[in-house]
Image (cartoon, rainbow, N blue to C red; front, side):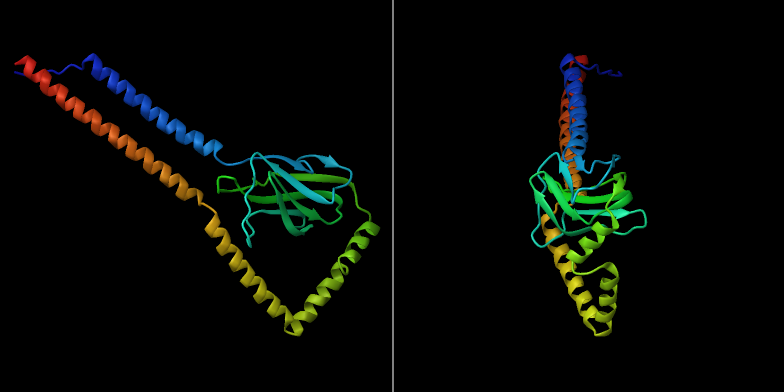
Length: 234
């Protein structure tokens, strides 16, 4: 005699609850992916704007406090002209939600901004490459020369000094020191930053584990229910 099992109302309720649980787990995972990291909410100069003259520094404001790594370059801002020349200099300053860096006087032109920061949740965030602004008037040649003088010489003197340093063997020593500092920075940064892929993998493992547990419980309930149904049929 063939036995046809029918799901009882409690079983239907269990299955419905299980489906809701799965939906909640994956919705929660999607929400974590979307909202866990801090976001860039403002910039000075603002992205996409045209300004007469650029400020002395560029400042980025984020939705949460930006973390710092001692001895590393966890946070970075680079302003470049369309020829790829960098116009930012010095260290990056982090104060709460604001990250800033000094800029040299900018002549008339359009400039691109590249940035990366260490989010408050430990993940690295970075620009999408669409941050740019235009300077309509810009700094005069006199202003630029005065700035170069305050920095210890113009760019031509700097290049000449660099060449001489290379001939004397000092350039090589400087390169070795820079490489060592870069390695130390990368090491410090790697210890402090939580890789996003690792965090995502951990979350997925929890979801899979919870889903497996739910399936086991549903299987046991179905098995017991089917046995009881078969006994009642006989």
